[in-house]
Length: 498
Image (tube, rainbow, N blue to C red; front, side, top):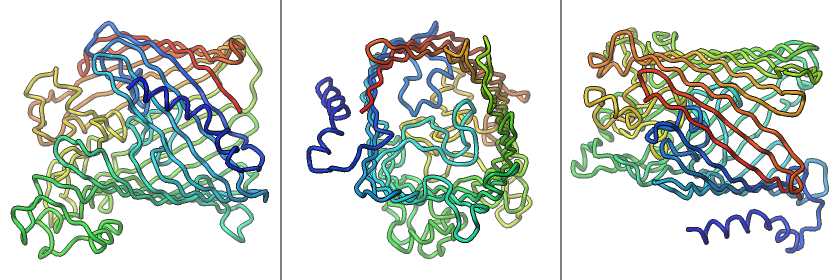
């Protein structure tokens, strides 16, 4: 394993030169860089690293154990045409080796593709969030938060907001469409496929005070082998539907005919569907940019009937435009409130739109592994895997479903700034109440389980060895959901620019 890791570091460091050696005479890209990082982490409770030390780290930091890590990565863009915004090659790779009792070698990024203007085509693993929300000091988008490793996909789309023709920049759009595969060694469902798409619009004067946002994202897990699938034509088969017809029914969200699917697919949809419909408003003033956003959750027809309209992620982000180098300065603040308790109510009546509740977020009857990747929640980390709460006892277990805790509310404050314009600092403070799931609500306390999780991070760029960032994160968990734990992570990152 160490030889593989060294080889990846070598590839990450010298790939730019090897590409040029193959005859690419265009000028190097602006964003061609690499890094090597070493880190050490630990906690007072060896079975539980504090929430914000391992959460939203793309699945690269273990949830438990004291130890260390070595990370290396490279990302770059290379001109294939001398035209402005002409054809470019894009690529990136990141490798992580953790040194704990359950040490794992991870490859959270490994992708390559082409870019023309704002349009991209790539294949591989790539870190991307989904939805209209803060991605830095917030809790992460509801559907894809950055909490789990990316999956392998082929994706096309426009990676940043792009002018709609003939609108002079007043109307812009961002869109992507991808298909891929998930981890093969899932506990229940194997060979699962994943479809994902998004479309967002931005309306407003490019240089004006106000801009409006709106759009949606749609995700579907489908096509795997599930012990809970029943094919009326082949009762012994556990293969969920595949093929072009099934693919069309899946991407459009239509129901399959009862004659060609089991009862679940015919009364719901092919596979496990989820997503959000987002709206936002941005005010750009001289002093600060203010973004307000709302993500409305859907997993079945509850949102159409508005019976789960109470559920969603609400946030406001304030970014200062003028920095003065004060002794202690706040550059950015995020306040968020997440609510998932409603789920359309406690009843599920298939033929009554006003009582079709129990949405059971991130769980699914067929895809019992749920909305997870390598047993980490892909979406908001406040909907927790049952694996993380086994210490609470058998009464809290929800069979082989992925999450036993998808009815929650959480408040969050994130801050980012600098000390004497040199030391960067961040703070994440979250408090949640956790009410389990409707299907096991009788085992959870009616008032829920309270949980506080906090983090303070410090980092400073130095000129050591040609450029290095020193980082220190201190975190704590205190409450009823997780064991009380206090932990730290220290890191040294060497920057390599080409």
